[in-house]
Amino acid sequence: MDIEEKKLLSSYAKSELVGGLILGEYARRAKDNFLRDKLIHHSAEEIRHASYITTLLEKNGGSITAHDEKGSHYYAKAGFPKSEIEVLAMTEAFEPVALLHYKVYVDTKGVSDDVKNVFHKIIKEESHAGWITNWLDTQLDKSAVDEARNRYRKVIEEVYLQELERLKKLEGLVREIAINADKYIKRHGLWE
Ligand SMILES: [Fe+2]
Ligand SMILES: [Fe+2]
Image (cartoon, rainbow, N blue to C red; front, side, top):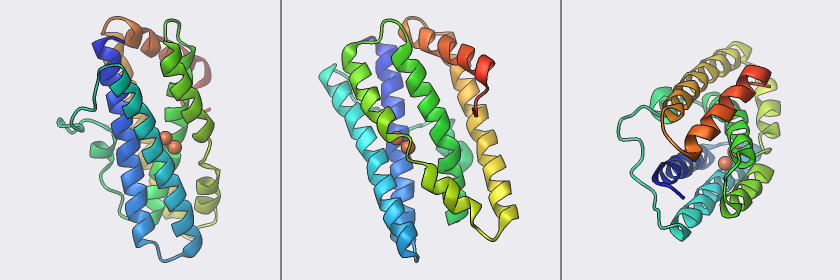
């Protein structure tokens, strides 16, 4: 595993962790029993993904670096969500992009079996956003839902495409992953 792949894995682990922590904070605040239960499970799953990747890195002599000190990543750009609608619109937008990226990653030639096994496990659990779409679709404040959905999709699209451009300029496996992701998006779009 080269240094760039380690850095990339570290950034995924941090995204999973921060996503899980934000969901956990909203679970703590939730007044509604259904929502609280769902958020606890969802938060735990994201933090579990962070722990899978951390273990993988440790096995390969890597570790998790400090989170996004430059403030250029998704959560810094999106800001801490101000409402349940916002946290769920943000998560709903984030999920398909993470899933797409992880799928492209494991299909890229040269990825080790160790890494593949971890991401296959994560991918299986990443189709957990159905309840979020249902919840958002049933909110009375439709314009707040639409506004939040559009805003987060825009942020995630912008940050992700920028990140792919950055990775394409590097060497080795991460460059191949970025090229494959780019090809996938050109064929299917980012939100398919
Ligand atoms: Fe996850
Ligand atoms: Fe997820």
